[in-house]
Length: 210
Length: 251
Image 1 (cartoon, rainbow over the protein chains, first blue to last red):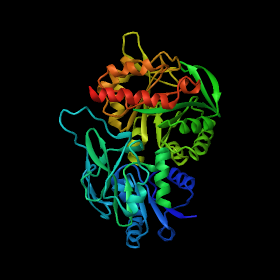
Image 2: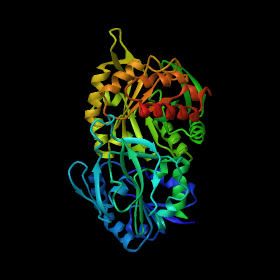
Image 3: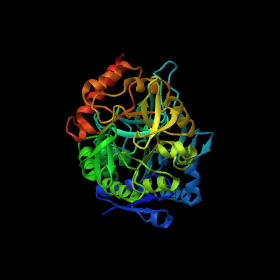
Image 4: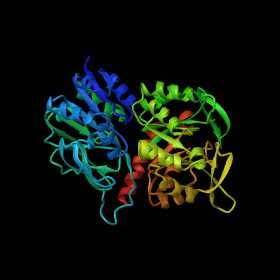
């Protein structure tokens, strides 16, 4: 059974991630210990809440170094939601904050066209995603089986633009396209929550641990 | 539009009343949650109907058990009073908490939760009751206790304090299956900047269609009775909602 480390830095619904991993046949190892995590075959980097809070919580446990080390060792890592955003260079949520810099690019606010339908934040919706042709390797496997009928649960106010070179799937909110998933080397990450997206999300987690 | 199954829970049972009174047992919450998840519902709200002071852990155990087989967002509400309560709810597997009484008593709790866990985690729960002058007042304790707060003012205060969503329940319509309070929805819809979950009164497709006359559909509806009594399936409601959204987008 594949051991999947779930990075515990005090942010996010870890029980749900662990339950979902167990459901798809993996053995979740929820831990805040770098050594334990680096011994796993796969890593999940969850996260909810504010970017700066997450980054500080991660650093306080020294786990920012662990995530970088995991990338160096090419341990496949799946970032989820704020876990995805923290992998970027920086975020513009409440000021400008530096991220881990493992995926080049910025996390921005939504700015829909003037006169567009009034929009609300956070974007709390089940949305379809469009995988891009360039999604290959780890990202290609992750997105296997996604169809136009698949729906994923998003809850976020900030996003990576869909024209980020590392975007591998896009979605839209208030007419604005954004990155639903990104990938670089051994890292894949989703803006949505696969662990909360029903059978479509479980399929994706299964892809990740197979 | 998300379709949310609302499970009002008392001790170990899903219960349902009319206008939040005359509560009857209708089933086991863990089984209901699994059944609705399998049927494709988008989200589940567990609402502790009696805000049981003595037996809070029962609800947490229910959430823990439900989460083992339910892979969609979970909201828990009813009687959460402190940052510790919220933390326990999230540890049990909830993604969000819905707060009513505690916000009325101490609005700073909302800010504290938003600051610690993020706005996406806190849903401002409002029990709205129509007043003789045509306005709506916010109530607590299952629509029994008036707070003196005008619903529209209260929405603005909750948003300023940091709620990520609003759960708007019409006490007058709840459990009646006679339709939503469309005027209440339209009034709140016009001022809120947060996703709005509309609850209370859904009984038939025309009740959802009635909302499409408003400038914007709710972000979500929360339904109980029609699901519990097999009057509709989640798939029916989702298809209906998607149909309306198609119309709204085309307009």
